[in-house]
Image (cartoon, rainbow, N blue to C red; front, side, top):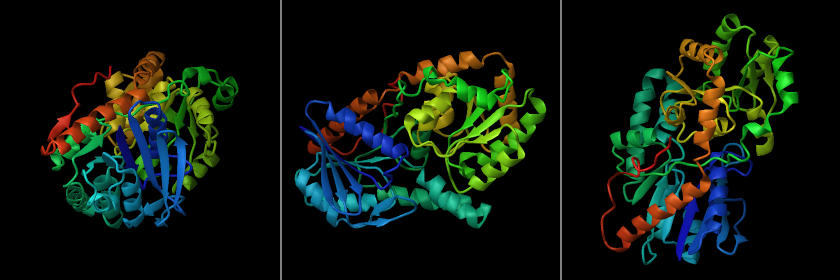
Length: 410
């Protein structure tokens, strides 16, 4: 029996990529023979929730509230109790700020010692310390990134490996001194996100009476790092260059929601549909649009990019980070330099006018259908067993970027 314990401060009770990852992991590992899965998540009270015969969610009550509905495990006491109760073979630490030293402390007295694995769910040096310093002054961003990388090297120096969902991200970690890496691309539910969910009423509403109007869909957080300002700037150009002018549909929320609302007030064909609180509703909106801009260079996998491809949309992605990697792997769209509104406008004009929009959508869909969650977690299980075997055999952790060349994604 292989016992896997995940612990993650990025869990949200309402949504997000980490929530999807952990729920899909519980589903898949719950179906596997010889595997037991325990997920330790921050909660208001300490409770144990049995999901199935071999899946348990442990809510750790000694956690502190953070932004929104997030909470952070910040002391090791509750986590140590969970570790001692379940005696895992491997612990996966999914968030890098508080948890790595807590995981080490909580498992220090366990024999045999569990293997410790990190998962790079957030690009901490670039999105936290780098962008954080940029808010003080743009010239400080490189120093902020260097501080973040120093922190990450220290946090994970005693870990046996780090899982990354993108080859681009993995190469960047290697360049910055993190070299015990395993390539574990994530999945997408291509039965939920499918062109078959196209809703004629939504299409007609967004086209505004013109059957040739193309529809752009932005289902990302309303923030600068997601490319919101970049897109709004490009849209002003598109209104002049494309006839009929494209519709632009926003779904979600974020700190720059006022910019979205201003754009809706100023433009007849800009729509804000609010936060879509079900995957089925989100999938219906994806399938009813034509082009999805995925403009962040900070994505560690790009789940919304994969969902757009699965739904048959052409994607315009930043050429740095995982979103661009997905698009380049399948030919389902175009990539552009980050934060370049002129290049973004040119790319969207090309997609609208070159006659390849449907073909790009088909290529993206065919590619996304290969990205199953079952394949993701079967791959993780193989890596877990390899890492645990090295640990139990007294071998040092394996260095390099394992699996990066072994998975065909086309």
